[in-house]
Image 1: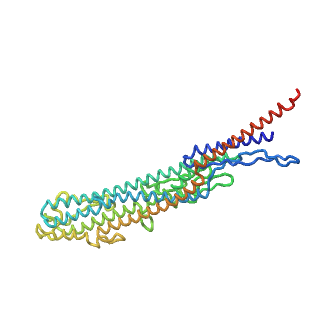
Image 2: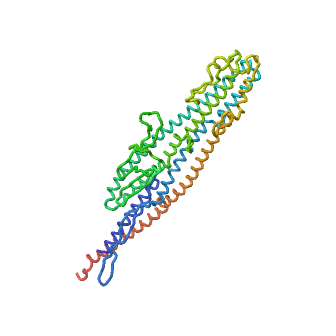
Image 3: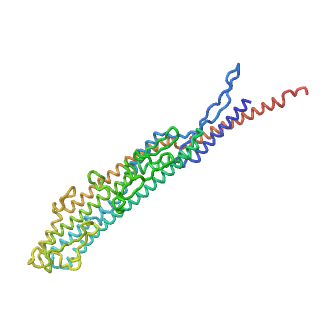
Length: 475
């Protein structure tokens, strides 16, 4: 009977190996699936006195998931920087589009039109047909500044909404990991491995690792922990939630921060959330990232400085009606870029454009207008920081910073893409399903199954002869 049992064990082992191969082929396109292998070993031999040890067959003792924990660690560590620089690159591209460089809707194009209209007016100060373009180009310039400020604010609000969405996503993933932890722990009490559930959990960690920097630990007793910046997000079946809201609950419209549900601040090191927070909070001060607030502040600085510079000189001149001390632009000091506009006095009466340099200079006096035009080349127009110089220099400085930030994001993302491709290639070689390999296994296990079946047929024939045919001679 030992031979018969041995053949049956081979039949069962081959059958189970075929099941595993079939499972691999069925899931070769399943996200996060890891190739499985049926580990086979010889069963305990039978000792026959005077003969030795007689083999008793084979068995499948384990279904192993082909997964390299070191490659997973590398993937999770590199996925977070990839997510951070990806969102930074995309948002900076949006900011570049808002500033419209280089295009017909750029700041410098609008300034060119405005100063060209002023130059034309200087040739014929008393002609209203030359004054009208000055008003219209000035309105176009201010509206462009207003619209850019509005779009930057909208971009900031959209980014904050994305942060809220990402925080919810992190919490949801944490809940799913905790639920899988309970299932896996219950199923693995008997020592087996819940391979497919572990694949699902690792896929969730893959997704989480792009949003925030994570660390995974699994204790010897099967408890699974996921940490973010050293603080536990998932501790087996318990989840600590993230929140994104006002720093001061009394000021719901004030600055926001990312924190744990217990109120402690979260200091992210990388990930999509880190990139989004840098873009929303970064004002470029004290070495901080140059995010949306930085460009908002620079736009406000430009609008305020440009309006004040033009107004200072304009108020020194006289209009056709002898009026003086009139602002060309108006604005709200607290929010200059969004509110800068041509003054109502000039819009309602073109005679109040202060072209003349003297009260009795005559209708063709253009001395004050020439001084206004000269402001464009005045290197002392803006005096502070990196953006000092004339209006063109100020805009160039902003665009230069934007180009540097955008190029940095693009290069960092490109570097991370190369690193990630290498890690994914290594992971695929370890855990991926190769159709050629599996088809080869299919043929191998099929032949083993057929061979075991033939052995059973052979032993059946032997037993038939032994039991039913021996001793019939002479009857």
